[in-house]
Amino acid sequence: MSTAALALTSSPLRRNLAVVSILLSTLMATIDTSIVNVALPKLSRELHVAPSETVWVATAFLLAVACAVPATSALGDQVGRRRLYLFGVPVFTLASLGCALSPTLGALVAFRVLQGLGSAVILAVALPLFRNIFPPEKLGQIFGINAMTVALGTSIGPTLGGVILQGLSWPWLFLINVPIGAIAIVLAIFFVPGRSKERGDYDWQGAVYAAIAIAGFLIGVRQLAAVSTLWQAAVLLVASAAFAWLFIRRERRAVRPLIPLGLFTGVFSLTVGTAWVSFLGQGIAFIALPFLFQSAYGATPLQSALLFTPWPLVIVFVAPLSGRIADRVRPAYLAVTGLVILTIGLAMCALLGDHPPVWLVLLSTAICGLGFGTFQSPNNRDMLGAAPLKYAASASAVLNTNRTIGQSAGAAAVSMALVLSGAAAGSVAEQASAATLVLWVAVAAGLGAAVLSFVKLRTVVAGAGAA
Image (cartoon, helix red, strand yellow):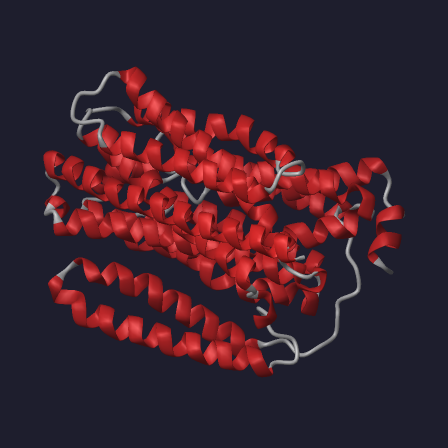
């Protein structure tokens, strides 16, 4: 049955219940990218490990998602998207339960990896499943709702984590996923439609090369934090480059490549690069700010979350508005403007000092949210718009992989700062100093993203003029 025919056979009620399942699972998957960030100082104390080691709780999840998204995006066509979705949501839910019951940091990190694999499946099949559920003329609206869900989930995690930790222990950060996951599974079984899988050669070799290249890069960057592990970093980064070369070589010859190299035109490549650098800055801020708030200011997890709240709150209101405006003006103008605002906000966070007034902290995080909310929707629109229709699924995989790699690299940067500054020993003053230092790296990332976005704008304008 074709996608259009499948959508027309579904009643509005069935469609809506299927959408509830997909949006619930997407919200869980994106919230868990950052919900533990505010708990890292507490995990360090309760699990009796160094602060730099607890960063692995965040990094492991992002690393698993980044490695698995390219493979799972193409796997949906091979085994069926509904079947893959009904595998991913239970894996994520059960892994959440495992995280909550973990007695050690090692066990927690292991279950976070499994949780990340489930999240990768959910993110990979969500947009294609919407094509099975809705007729073409209604896809724009549901894609907009999905984009809002991703933005909300990605940014609200620290706030929600702080609220939970105010009255409950850290395992509840993961236990809340269990009933939500159960609801999503039941709704999916009865209401999410399927379609015939597409036959063809799955690029297993490319999937392995991509996963090793991504893992080698992210772990290798983290090993740069200490002189004693520099040799490990060198080996991992060289291996990452080698497997990236093998992946590119494989994709040129594959019958059904995971990521068609034809995607990477000038505008698409600049948009991807801009997004990556911006997510690097965001990933740094999402982990460094909780350390700063709790170390320098003595804030509780809830107070830390409330200080961070303006960032996601402003995104919720600004991102949809920015997306609508991008339909009327050139999106690249909004992207550049948003990145400049984001850079200003990050600089304000880095300049807060030891005893800033609360209103200044709230204003600084709000400006960050205003900038990121203004930038993200137009930039995503440019990215997906620059991809040919036949590469839409691959472009979506690039978008998801790009986000998780950028955020993972940001988490690694914070870990490096904690180790290099001596904060790994647990000194509160040193942790605050390291958090402030690494926020300046986030400022540099924001500025770099703005420059790349401006280059893309000039390329787009020049192309339009030539046409």
